[in-house]
Length: 162
Image 1 (cartoon, one colour):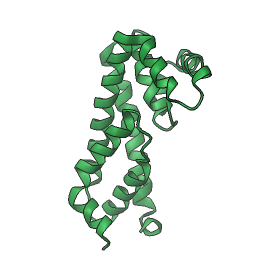
Image 2 (cartoon, rainbow, N blue to C red):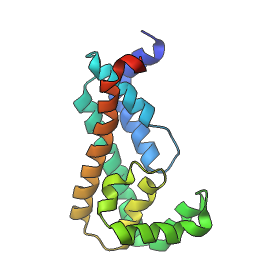
Image 3 (spheres, rainbow, N blue to C red):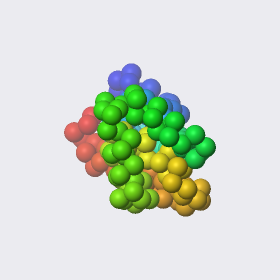
């Protein structure tokens, strides 16, 4: 067993939580390989897939709730800040607002799979006046879908990942 694998076995849950939280707060951290590795380790019985999924969902919900309330109370300033650090700041605000207007809360279900949109969607939901309970429900479902997809793929392809 490599040192990296042993580190993930020993510190997997806090590592998954921290990596997902930092990524959901907007830092471009590639968290998907970590979730795939957690899934591969769960296939060998060295990591709990439910614990990995729980840490993923918890980290997503905490980060997204922060962005949701920042969007609710700081609105366009938060969105402008996020778009200023994006690759296309000129069209970012208009494009993301159009996408949220078009798909609404259903967009939150798949936002985690689209780079950049996972950070911008929660403040947009806050800006648009979505109730917090409804936001948490839909965002939680999207987080479960996101985490379970990558952990399951890691589990399914564990021989190829190792």
